[in-house]
Image (cartoon, rainbow, N blue to C red):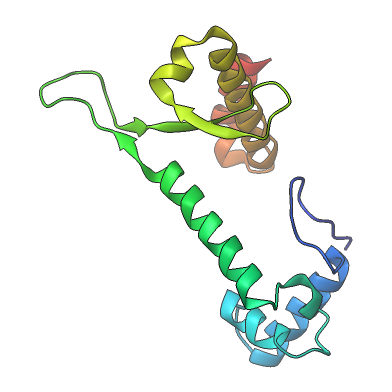
Length: 155
């Protein structure tokens, strides 16, 4: 079996092969499935192959964690339809957009849907996510109809 990091992965300091090998070692040693805290406990040891994948400078790690939390806030706020409104389910209030050469950022969904270029960007992102799901789901007969429908819409 060969391993690689998923596209967009930010893991540094270790190959996917080395990480997978160590995780499998831990699973066998623990005689159970591995949890993230098992990996962290192992990685704390400087001789662990997983050690270089972590930020051990607490001030750097704390800043990265707070940025992660801020992103979680942005991705968790939803707009709730007015009571009695038949507009459907709650939707994310803020969406990730790319404007020109700037770093990706978040704007309000209403603004995004009123800007034709941003709306198109969001539709392309959804199509890409749907294709990625279909690629994973196509391995299972159970999802054949869903995959077929996705292929019809995004082809």
